[in-house]
Every structure is written in structure tokens, then in C-alpha cells.
Figure (cartoon, rainbow, N blue to C red):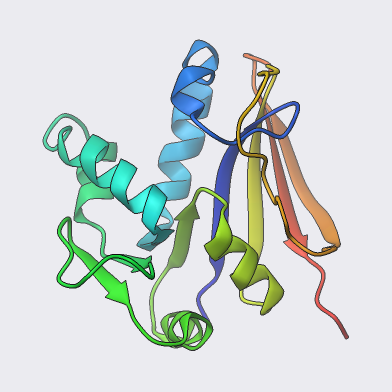
Amino acid sequence: MRKIIVSTMVTLNAVMENPHLWSFDFMNDEIAKYAYDQLFAADTLLMGRVTYEGFAEAWSARAGTDDFADRINSLPKFVASRTLKAPLRWNATLLEGDIEEEVARLKQQPGKNILQYGSGELTHTLIQHGLVDEIRLLVYPVVVPNGAHIFENLSKTVLKLIDTRTFSSGVAALHYQPKRNE
């Protein structure tokens, strides 16, 4: 079965909103390779509406500029939304009906990892239904005064730390598995 990996950038005070305003000062070759390896280990992207709209605009404009942009543009994308209407652009398919059932079906298909960037309502739903296999947080050594926090409004969820990595810029990658209820 394929794994769903959630990958999110957060500040030290758990803000995930607008990473373009606080993350670029810490970007270096190590983080670029980490992101590259993570993307190329996946063959499908899963996203909510907000991430889809932002990524579609930003990444489609970078088509042909580098391997990373070309990979993210070429991958099939599955989007959960109550407001978008099919057909979607940017090689994307709208998930319709019961999201948990649709995502469970995606996991059963052959292939590599399913990568989800961001962490909003879709992530919370998938965690609550036991569909997330791994959460990867890139924690940036910066505090911002406001913004949406990761895992807002999520019920108590216990995570098991399975890997860590630190980068010379001070960013830390923390990999967790949600503990399943036995």
C-alpha cells in the first residue's frame, strides 16, 4: 500500500501560513536536496483547495525552469474541495464524494508515495481517519507574530518521532507517525 506523507513548513511558534514570507532566508542546498528527494520519492500529490490554488499559480509559472518545477508540474494531483468544480487545470482531479473513501482508494493503487504539502482541514480529516502514514515538519528558526497554526482545531493526536535531521541554516526536519488506536 502507498504511504501518504504530509510535508509542512512551520515556524518555531507553529505558524504555517505564508511560508514565502519567512522561509527563504534559511534556504540552502541541503534543504533543496531534502525537498527534491521527498518530491521525487512520490508520484502523486494530494492537496486541499487553498494549497492547490496557490501551487497551481506559482508552479505553473515556473514550468521549464528546473527539474523540481517540472516534476511538481507533471505529477498527477488530487484535490479535495467543497467549492471547486471539475474539470481542474494543472493536471489535477477533483476528489468528489466521501474524501476518506477516495483517499483510501488512492492509497490502494500501485505506485510511490502520495505527498501532501500544507496542513489544513484535509490533513486533519485524513489523520482522524487513520490515513496519514507520516508527517514531516520542517521547523524554521523564526517566530512570526500571527498566522494560521499547524493542527488548529485537531482533536488530540499522539505522534511517534521516527526521524530527525538538522540543516546548517538552523532548520530541523522532524518526521512523525501518527499512533494508531489499537
